[in-house]
Amino acid sequence: MNDTMKPVRILNYKRRNAIKENLTGYAFIFPQMLAFLVFMVYPIFEGIRLSFYDLDFVSNRFIGLDNYRALMQDKIFFSALTNTIIYMFFVTLFTVVFGFIISSAIFDKSERYMAFIRGSLYLPVILSMVVMSIVWSWILNNAVGLVPYIMETILGIKRVNFLSDERFVIPTVIFMIWMFQIGQAVILYVAAMLSIDPSILESAKIDGASRGVILRRILIPLVRPVTLYIIVSTLINVMRAFAVIHLMTGGGPNYKTINMMYLCYEYSFKFGRIGYGAAVGVVMFLVVFIASITRFKALSENI
Image (cartoon, rainbow, N blue to C red; front, side, top):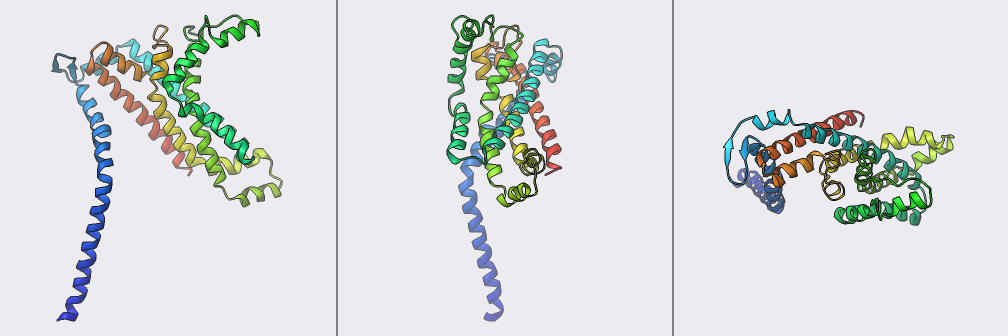
């Protein structure tokens, strides 16, 4: 009797230990999961709910899809949507291209040289975006800024108002947002390139492969997973860009630089149209979701 019950007891003991270990693991991740649900998941669903209401600080009335219908007739919304897509495309493109070029140029150099370049490019990421935006506002100021002064006195070029001239303001915003993204891209690309087996690169050099062939045939395919991560994270970061536009241009001139994040802020908090601002936020979420899924599928097929 005891011999036949022994395997059952052992099995029950293992099950109890497994349940205990699982509960311990869940206990450790519970605070993080709770924070994720409260501060990430819940606001998404709450924002979707609010977008169906005519909501301000004193009233709350269900209006269905009226906010979305109004968006389709809002010229400022389409300006913000267009600018957001422009920012996402060019900042992501420049981040991936220049991040890869810089990383491929320094990953096989000396440790000190590589550390200096990576640290220099990563410095804007460490510093506050608010501080950097204010400093660059001074540097680019048409009256007292350093860049317009150098253009006029040293280069003999007429001063350019980078922050209010419609010809230059969008490239200026793209440059500012890009400057906060390039450092992380270089760090990730260099780490990915250093993880490549050195024998692969040495074999290619012995076979007479040029630098360009090594880049196209070895480095680009092997760092594709990192490229996917950089694209998706950059799209999300560009979509959330707020401080640069708020502090440097205020969405102007004539809503020329406004993006969806800043428009959501203006409608919700400056004009008190919380439901309408929530509708802008929902569309913004859909844009970044579709863009991320599209790039993920396009690149993951070749990984």
